Every structure is written in structure tokens, then in C-alpha cells.
Image (cartoon, rainbow, N blue to C red):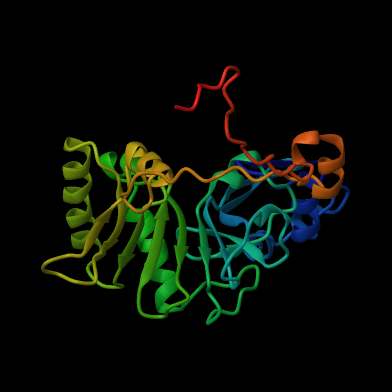
Length: 280
């Protein structure tokens, strides 16, 4: 064996592949069991498909298709940065858990599935909980043309155990049931079209209810400003200014004569004429 060709479409390094395949140059090419090499590579969590070919006189070629992660998943209820967390795993569309040695920048923008405490998260394992499978199905269905641009999922909370609480890029919170996700997304699409037509942003939508679906709208910027200025719907009160350091009255009395004790007024005397008249 004089040459080993490795082709992959992902982040796997050549050294990782050769180590996993237990393959090296210099051995007898006919001593290499291609089926064994195939099975060893297939056990890597990152590997989706693999093809191993023997090319005479002295080459073995391996072509690998890696799994494409579509989300992060964690048992934590809240996670700020999945990149820096040891409890966060990447998961592909088939539910296979991965932990990449080389994290690509595009992984940071993937949605996060949180609250998956009922699942044992281990690289290479396939998730089997109902709520985690429903979350992956929702991500798959939400990639349709309109929903992909209008409803971009950022977080899916599965901690309730009976529903999915989904937050999108606009911080709209939508509650989904596990069943009939396609029909629920169609109803959500109607609400999104309605809100766009009336230039209102959805705040919450509860799709667990099939009729009279509870919907709330986010407050507009003008409403937020008005509540900040006048939260009680009343005229703003003008408060009397209070000095930070009130003056000392004793010092102020000594410095300002007007604060001295007032002098009592002199009694008013009766006026006497200069030339008194004669008495008759």
C-alpha cells in the first residue's frame, strides 16, 4: 500500500480518519479488509456515508460524506453560548448526536433545543425521546420557502414534556403540540400573514388550541414610549425639587440679616398740630 486517498466534505481531518480506520501505508494492500475499514469509519458520529475502494496496484481511496448539524441540543433549560458549553451537542436531521473537534462559525447560528433532560446525550447516540424528535421534525418542516424567511427558529424549549415552546428571531413565542406539526405551521403562517398585513408583530401564539387560538401582539414603539412617559394614563406630576444638601438654618440666619429676630414696631403716637387753635 503506497497511497491512501481521503476525501471528505466536512471537518474531519486526515489523521482522524486514518486513526479510526486503523490504516497506514506500507502494509500489504491485500491484507486490508475493506468491509472492516468501512464499518470502523461508519462508527464515527460525524460520518453519514462512507465508500472504501481498492485501486490497484497500491492505492486505497476513502470518500466520506459527513453529517450536517441542524441544531444544538442540551439538557439545560437555558444556555447562553453552546460553543463554550460541555453540555451542548450538535445534532443532525436524523437525530444523531455529535461533538465536533473543529467548530465552524456557522454552527453558532444554529437553533438550540433546550430542556432535553429526559434524553441521555452521548456522541454517536440517536435521540429517541418524543419531544426531541418533535423538535427536529419542526425544524425540518419550518424550512419551507415562506416560513424559512418569516419564522426563523432560534430556540425550542422541550422541558414541559407535553409541548414545544418555540422562540423565533423576532422573539415571538409559539406553543406547538407534538402531533400534526404541519397543520399547526399552516395555522401559524396565516397569523404571520395577518400580522404583516396590519404591520403588527406577534408576541405569543398557542397552537395547542385548535379553535379560538389565543394570540397576543407585541406593543408598538409608540405604545412603549407612551407607557414610559405616562404609565397610569394621567398627567405627569411635577414634583418639588429637593436640594441634595439642605442649608443649615443657624448658619443661614447669621449670614443673612433678614433672618434675624424682627424688631418690634414703635407705638404710633397721636399727631399734635404745630399751631393749636384758640379756645372760645
